[in-house]
Amino acid sequence: MPRIELRDGQWADLRERITHGVDKDIKRSRTKSLNEPEEAFDWTTVITRAFVRDWNVKDPDGNPIPITDPDAIERAPDDIIDQLYPEAAQLWVGATTPNEQYARIIGRLIIGQSVSESDIEALPDPETFRDALLLSTQGRWSPTDLDETDALLLSLVGKIRNAKRGTG
Image: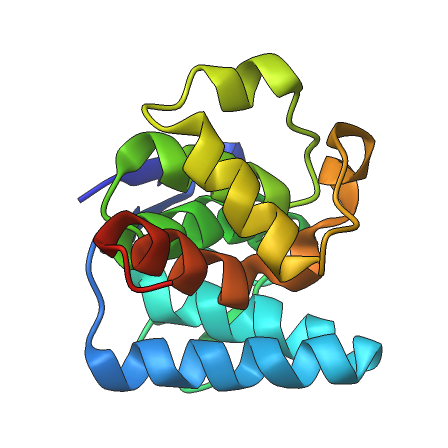
């Protein structure tokens, strides 16, 4: 269970695995956020809530926020959630994608970081990854588009798996 050290001695323990039901909730929220950009804020909350197992976090007034509070994530300071969200997003991809190297690349794409051609070349099967990107973008992908592929995550994960199985 990864522990994330936060400012002022605060911390959060994240879970490494989630249930199928929680994964479906995350995917529903993500799909909604892709169709309605203002919903992206809710997706950040959903994925962060899904992976925070325990924490020692205080609200902006310095009061402890029990993780059992249904509004715990909403009550937390924004900078705390901004620090936890990328960690949670990468854990979600890691839990969804069996290969850790692919998970790291997709996780970077989710949080808006760019990925270089050399990052892709370092993957065990860079051609499958490129093929999945091309399938997800209807053939319009190029290495310069990597920082704009956030919207492709849901279909990309499935297409990589299918390509690896030979069913894609």
